[in-house]
Image 1 (spheres, rainbow, N blue to C red):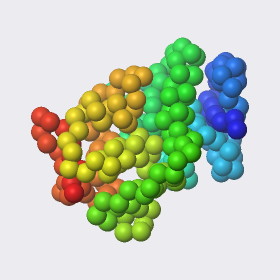
Image 2 (image 1 turned 180 degrees about the vertical axis):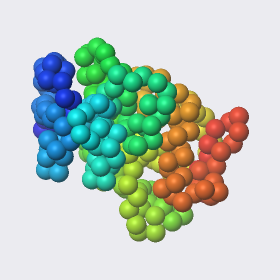
Image 3 (image 1 turned 90 degrees about the vertical axis):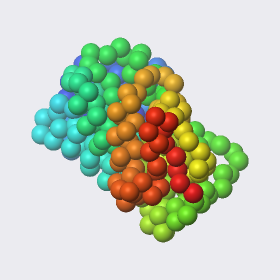
Length: 227
């Protein structure tokens, strides 16, 4: 089955060359120039990954990202001419999985798509069924890539899911920021320490873990998931 990649950008030239490169890689490309067109595809449930421009007419990319996260946990890669740390952190904080600054090499864009598709959908490709991981009142289901607390589903981004997978499969073990980065983001590109901290902070919010009851910070060492 071909993965469908949604390109959301108001510049037809950018959509066109991304579509050509993605199709050459074996993907099916869908194009949208604004929020309404993008949500039309997303609500139909036919999108595997979204390449999302920030500067769009009407609703901007950050607001679209917030709406996407209410409907789906598919990978989202932000495209933006704004390359400041603040913009990157905002995108990640809202649930983006990657951030690509304009102008970019289309081959790099395809490589980022490949990396995120491989990381997010590889679990579903495994033939051996993985068992649900249970730690205290949390349940992680590798088959459906979902997390539940006391039976209630907690919506996670792909990166957040990967971190919870790492923590819950090894409760009590201390992980360095480098180890967390390698598991959550892969080794294709560098993620700053503060981006890891933002992701951990979002996980704590979703777990109602203000006091570090689940994810413990060990200064100078890293993080540990409490048994």
